[in-house]
Image (tube, rainbow, N blue to C red; front, top):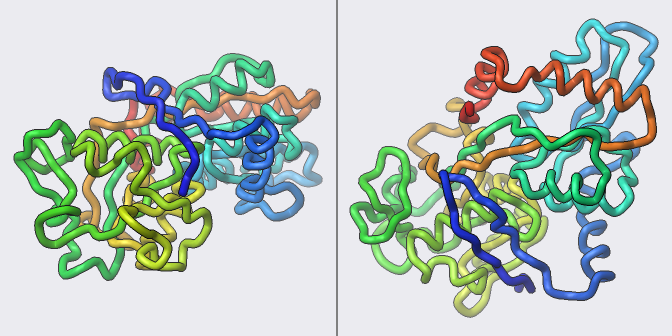
Length: 336
């Protein structure tokens, strides 16, 4: 079981203010939890990608930590940025809460730029006075419900929703309003995957969507099992009692559990699945009314050269420009 309370605030303008769950326990337990997940954003040579400039020798190397939904777009961004430079960008990813906790707890991995999945975790860095400049919005992410490859008797995600219902959860292309078929209807979503809302904003979005569909589908996390990194283990073998949801440490692990057929389906980011060659559009349903405003922040790391390169990378992004809007659209984010 996950030992946290969900503190809900009103959702306005299709964004989330501070739907952040609070972990119950002592301060020491919180710190241990944050660093136990730090392998998501490792030091050393274990980065998931390294973008190396074409001008040698390399003069400055920075670490950029990104929310897991932005993992693949960050590769394209960093590769394009370093071309023609003597810079190297090491990329690591993880849940936004984990990365934020690592930065505010001392920044042991010398992260120079943090691209989070919501505003609140970027703001945490600012409030801890670990920032250089204000947080800035760089994307609007869209949650989707994605079916596993071997989902029960239908590979069409829309078939797993009752439409024209009395609630107020809305999904693109489906008659308002929708409810996931779990308690009634066929085919049934018997188990689903979400990212752990304690640290992952896309998990928060999933919990809000489920709650909007029906309070019986979320129940403040009482139906969820903390599966951590167990993406190859069937959720049905982990849960007990009334549980039917498995929570994973970040949204990338959530996607892996779906790909491994460990669940019927689950909630991930549109940016993770919009490659139609891998994920046919019929296998997922978009929830654009629950988009997440994603924010970044530069980090004070007491290294002038690295801070300069991080600032230059942010300038290269040119957020708000037509070129950046094209980048977002190409990687399945909404512009703003």
